[in-house]
Each structure stands twice: as structure tokens, then as C-alpha cells.
Length: 413
Image (tube, rainbow, N blue to C red; front, side):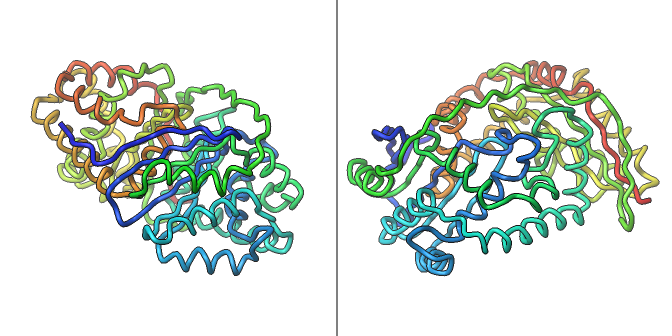
């Protein structure tokens, strides 16, 4: 049994802001704030706007110029960052306990009082366009974007979070500011904070700086799940040394209790350095240097990818080897024994303990679980479930998920 080294309390401020305080014996404090807005909220004409605003939040407020804001963030002496995905935008600060209140105040100013200055919009436009173009130069990034484009017709997953070039080129400051004011409201946000402070003291600081944030009605997000197309597409690109192969599976009809067996399957399939795919495609056949699987299980995104890069002459052999692994798992030809389950349990336990020990990781995990509406202590339930899970459950989930993939192959033109 894992021993918890922290205590958690949930609070709702009068303006609707949900706050989770995590009391932990630590000298490093962390605060994360998640805004429930991302690429899923965007219309076609808005693709990229959530990500653009994430960049602009660091560009100055009603109280601080761009330079002053970033100087003060830097002076915290810790780490500050942000990211946008399909369903949320997250801002985080980790710093010494003595700088914790300064971190809270800075985040509140950024989130509540951002100015989105016109001159910075034009500067950041160039930065984001360069970010989009640099991802096109990466064969791996390009391949993942391309398979999403061909796998979906209507899903937001069809488009990269960074957006469409044409949109980014044409967003106006007024468009950005209107979108920011629409979604950046307390009743559409959630804060998690890890510190050694008592819960009452911690929440007083949040109330002091975030209590003035004015709520506004926000429409709940209505996402229609779309299965990937059962299709194989070949794309060509100039001046690439290796060809890439990606398989994409979606599993929106999978029930909650099957998610843990799927995580074990993914680890055995391609997540570990001794995975089935790695051993067969790289070690046994020498076809690829890099091969892995990637699993995403959130409320609105249920995807499993398998990726590798090979010489063009080895595409067919590598594809055949990968598909044989899928087939042999589903038919139980590949044995998943007690040793595999024990290893997965150790992997899971190591990941959990690492998260509990690190203030930033703990803060991020609890934020993610809470934004998804999941139990923040789910990892404890998973530990118990691992004791009773069977190989048959893993084979069953393999037969549910590993069907009708979208396949994308990238070759040199």
C-alpha cells in the first residue's frame, strides 16, 4: 500500500473558481491553473486561437509591461510554463516557498488583467508561424499531423492545436481579446496548489488575488466523438532520409474498467524499452532504430498510435511485422503472463511514487484529473486493481481496440 505524504481539500470561491489545496511537507511550492478551453472549443475559423492566447498571456497586463512581467516571473527563481491541448490551457509556476505568494499574485494578474497589446500580437504571430513551420520540418511531427488529417473528417483532432497558418496570419487583437474574455473566467477555471501552508492560509491567498475575478456564463462543451477512418494513405515529402509508418486506433466506446488493461497492453506493446514492437522490429529484424506506441485517454480524446521510421525498402516488412504483433496479441499467441503484470505494477508504483515526491508533478496530476472530472485518488484504485487483473482482460481489450486502424506512410518524393 502506498503511503500518502500530502493532504487535500477542495474549495469553491463565491465567483465559482474551484481551488484544490494540497498540503505537503515541501520547500518547493507549485501552483497550476487550468482554463477549460482548447482546440475542441474552436470553430474552423478559430483553429489556433486558444494556443495564440496562451502565448499572449505572457505579453503584459494592465499593471505590468511585457518586460516587467517576464522579469518578475524570472525573479521567482523557479520555473514557469504554459501549454494548450484539445480541452484545456494550463499555466504553472514552481518556486521556493518564500516566493509562493508572489507567484500567485503574478498568475492572477496574467489571467485576469491581460492586455494583449497590439504590437505584441504582431510579434507573436511570427513566433507561432515559425513554431508551426518548424513542426513541418520534423518528419515525426509532420507524420503525426498528417495521420490525424486523413483519419478524421470532422473531429478537432484533424487539426493541430497550434492552428492553421491562414488563421494565425489573420487573427486580430479584437478577436483574441473577445475569445479571452469569453473563456478566461473563474467559473471556467480550476486551480491546484501544493505548498507546506495550512489549507486555510493557502485559500486566503487565492481569495485575495483571484476573488475579484468576475464570473460569466460559459456554454458547456458538446463534443461529438469520431472514430478514425479505416484507410491507408501514402504521402510523399522531399529530402527525407527515412520513411515513417503510423497506425492510429480510436476507442470511444471502451468502458472505464477497460482502461487499466489497455494501459498495461500499451506498456507491453510499445511503451517500454523491452516492448513487443521494439523487440521484434528493432532487435529481431533490425528494421528500425525507433519504434513506440503512444496512448491518450482523456474525456474527449481516446487514441492509440504506433510509430516507427524505416528505410523505404523496409516499409512492407516493417508493416507486416507490426501487424503480426497486433494479430498475435489478439489471438493469445503472445503470452501475457504474471511476470508482465508484476512488471507493470512496479512501473505504475514507481510512476505514482515519483509523482507524490515531486511537488510540480503532484500539482499537475491533480489538476489534470480534476479538469477531466476524474477521482484524484484513482492511482490508488489502480494499484489495487492491478492485483486482480488477468491476462484475459488484456486480450479482451486488445480485441476491442486493435481493429480497423488508419495507416499513414510517409515516403521520400
